[in-house]
Length: 223
Image 1 (cartoon, one colour):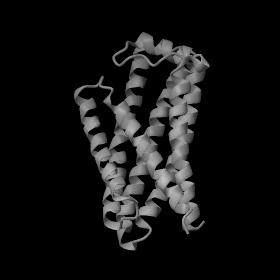
Image 2: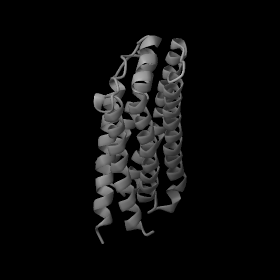
Image 3: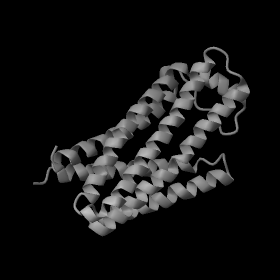
């Protein structure tokens, strides 16, 4: 596949990642598929058991779409690295660092989803309330752990854009700000576990992916 085709594929994959991610959230945490809204932070084990039991179908669909979304995320990351570092071979190591960050973040996000999936399946038989709380906590900690490699991906991308100017400079600056945002949010969660600021950081990250994807697609159409 040539550069134009690779950039177009990466751009489309990035947009599909965002669409599938938020579709999974909407279907999993709303009554559309008969599910309940996710219990608030600090909810007891009984509430999590009820959530996993009643929202069985919705949560399984959510887990499936979440996993599918990150398949597209990997394609986006690969295309992004090619677009930023493909023009200068001397930045290959930095590109590998960025790609490694994307792969590691994907692995942790999928692990988080797998733990939730296990909780949903266990709730159909008999799930101890304390175990339900533990599984939810492990799932969330894996999610938070993914923010560190995501910060590596974004920071490396910011530096790569600054050095190669392969993408608009402001897009690189935005990536740098998001890298700091993920690291700061992880620290905030450590201090205040019930903070919901991370939701807004994810929204900004999704917006950055959509803008980046659109630029990749547009540039793929330029001869």
